[in-house]
Image 1 (cartoon, rainbow, N blue to C red):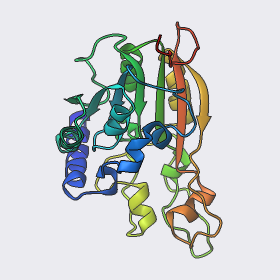
Image 2 (cartoon, one colour):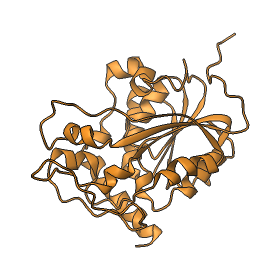
Image 3 (spheres, one colour):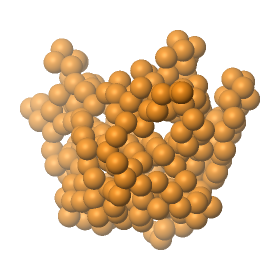
Length: 271
């Protein structure tokens, strides 16, 4: 399967998710929009404010991310492969009175954007949908100003290697090799955990830690922080998403800063 086939397949998956009102396509509630930075940046990586900053929501259509950052005062651009997902952003913007720019393209082709155009790039889980992350990180570095922030989230390699459901003995099995350029096998599970961990029909790839962390650094960023969003619950019923997350962390979140600028807060108080 070539690059264009992969994009075409994954676009259809997300178009269908948008049409089916998948949980990833639900707009923010009024209470979340009333305090948007708390909703999207509980760790405080973005400082006290993003008001007036040029912010790119990369591969982040669906009407949620864009609205939260627009409500926080940022100048928002949304890039997504799926036109249907971007349509949700357009509808939410019209309903809420937000102004934003919407662009339909792959995350590894940002040729329509200017060098150093953005103060902040927000990149939710999506690198798994391309066989290589090198081109993605290079494009992000090109459009991020020196000293700008890049916050990305990724599916952990082990999570993509492991079985969705536990065996009869309660263990999870490694079923996909770590060193592989082939797509991760499609899920064979109808469990809620399976539906949350993987998008049915999507073509996904495992990216090793050296490709994620090393790739971000080699593209021109410095890693400033890293977290593993907590989804585990000790009392979670066996076979649930929270039960699996007790054994295998599903995601990693990375904060990086474009080299060449001052490592200071993005927030500048009004005079």
